[in-house]
Length: 165
Image (cartoon, rainbow, N blue to C red; front, side):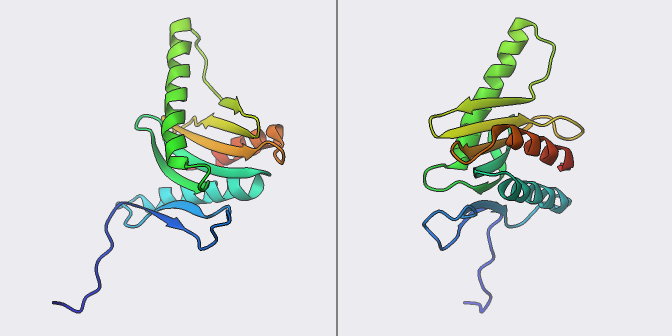
């Protein structure tokens, strides 16, 4: 036996805050051992997610998603009622279906965002455009009673513009 502590495993770790009552930061995905050169990308992703959580009224959770794989690159918020990893995978199917439909219709345009309206929530999918951003989208779940949809869309666009991937 050695006196060395166990080494952390590489990969994604899901951390939960001690407050089970629903702290908005209770469900955050972070990278334990980043690949060489990816620290800046992760910092920008984390900053963008935190910005969405703090600057947009009524946010339940936010995720940066790679829609080629369906994997969430980062999440913040969510909780027992909203698993952001499941939402990322499911909304990947929504984005792919819409892109396929646009192609079949011969529409030569880009998707800015997709809105899904539920009884108590808005789900907003913002496709990212620009260098290094293709294949990514920001997913935002909002409490319909507290959110201002127009302001949320405006803020999400601003976060997209500031995000460097």
